[in-house]
Image (tube, rainbow, N blue to C red):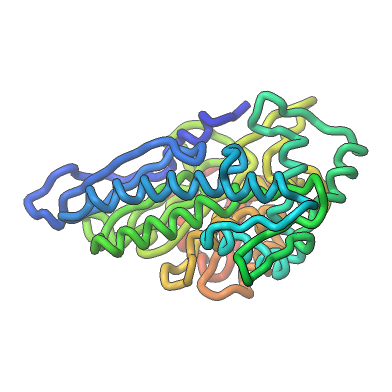
Length: 348
């Protein structure tokens, strides 16, 4: 069973020097557990320390707004007021919610932040995890639907239309935070660095110390070993996000029940996908936020629909790993993944 410990696995493999002759090549690095995730921030340059420390403060600020487990957060206030009244929210929470609704419409509801009641019902990754009854799931499905989110633009407020509804920004908040960290890096003129907010949100800034793209290892979805990965991809000024059924799950009677809930069925997505990775160009606005939500969306859509969906989006590509250990990619990632693990077969 994997809880928070699964999030401590570092999937970025890179050799870095802590000191060098030039201030522009001096590395400053900090890691911490925030948003229930192991995070690692690296930045090069004379202002690197300021950039990293300000970034960590920003992540804390966002968590206080977006966490459903903090009573004073905007999300908790929205959930507690469901079916009653509008709640005025911070512009950054509004942005995440509006983006979520946009991609819910594009994906025909595969992406949906109103799955909060289902997430709580299953309790996967908590001490209360269990397999709910069909009747319990059906009752909670009546509370799911992005079309039941009301927005009042005039005073930046949100209301969930039915009592008992709740939203969960867990599939988008880290990506949003990654975009905010990138803004801070740019403010401090950080040309090279690595923003790793867990598997769900990574951004490669510029190049590594060898003046080459950063080498990012995609986690092996069926191995806990940090040196046993699915493959490696070189990225520079790109966002990357991975979702998988190995992050939070439990096994009952030989069946794996994971945390990625299909909003249409109320059950963990079960379509043969065990992991997927989304990569977006850095010049795509909100690239990390989009990568984060798309990794969940594609996982739920499945291999064929997922790749078709991504192919229609600008500046975005994907890799999908299936339960028969085959790897599929969108056209833009063809032959871009190197050192593919011998456990897997790349289908071109």
